[in-house]
Image (cartoon, rainbow, N blue to C red; front, top):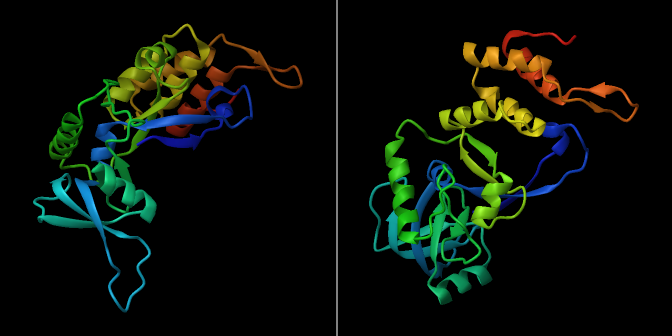
Length: 250
């Protein structure tokens, strides 16, 4: 579940060209709607079928709980992106493995893993994690693959949850994100206002047009390398508005 991605901080805050590394956690909501297939306990590796080339090992699982399909055999196989040593470890520790369509996987019993819902609630009980995966998938028959938004934890949230600085949580890019972003536009911190602007990119409507138009007069100012004034929040608002209604730069 824990992924590492590189994001250009300058893309969001216009203050540096360095590429920092952020820890990214996937919410159970995003996992459920991103091809989560089943949870099971690995028991062996199925030998390759003769006459063909098998790139991914076929891991055989028992005690399976299916997520995005109905029913399971007493033993169910999955082709996963994993090496034999890791599979042997799963078998030895009887770990519960969440497999995804396409071959990705998550070791639910890995003590380094942390699980959250899209509202930043920590889920510690693995049976609850599995139940939530199933429930989210059932609740959204209209979604084949979710579009994620990488919502940053605030400094306070990171301290409360014991997370790395600047960690992010992949959540569904839905109306909850819009409400969160609108709240950030009122922040006293310029970088939070800028983040709110960026998050509203997918929510074009008259109310948000008005909100971003007000930010074309945002007071925060910095200087570029030549000492020229820059207005990063204004620029973000102008860029988003331009993509919606063709607002031109001054």
